[in-house]
Length: 310
Image (tube, rainbow, N blue to C red):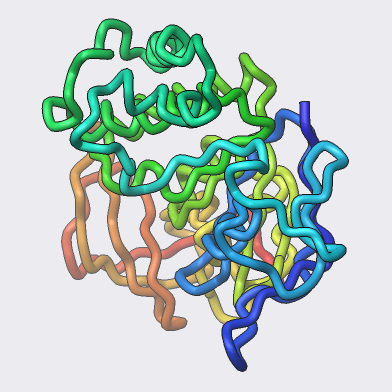
């Protein structure tokens, strides 16, 4: 399958630089999550890869073929990329089969409708070809969009916040689909999201951007357990400030002998335990697990098995 490379990519809008010297290489079959706060440049980077945003410097290469750079700018439809948007982008006046087949019809593929049915089968919509989009749920419409992207047999698949409009059950269902297709086809995925749990759960490679630059790129567990700086610690591992140090939320616990005093501000019952929100005397706030019934206003002490100094 295809390796995707980005070398020295930059993008400006007037005087504002939104991407600066982005250099990344994604191995064939990788599931890459682009994660970052609003305005970090992650969607701009995805659109640049897709050819929907023209770059100002650097290059983009897929399977050894230059898509952008070196006085080259391959149009989106010729980049051999599939794309799934947050908004589904399903045509309401075409039935499901025709929606999926449309890219192949443009190519004058005589087997377009049969291939569309095959793609629908793959995403769990067997027998839905004659249905109209208005009769489908949001999750089903996103599956139609996924089938339309896959029917072209792309070398890589780009996803721009594809789960943002779905409820938790449908999100989990589509996550399973993405994982299965990535593994089954060895297809490189590049998935933009602002949801850290979504990124950690799906990705084999995680790229965190801030202010148009790559802050850290690596395996999700590497960024979660070995953050490069304070921003990664807080953004990926939900680090909490305790004095001059940062502790990851997952390692913070209620401990009668702990060094950090705190006050319980909120309580959420979770069956076998309680999730509580606490305010630390040092000024930070955190969520921790409590095994015994707490009360708002209770004083507790906290400790952590992991402490990061940046």
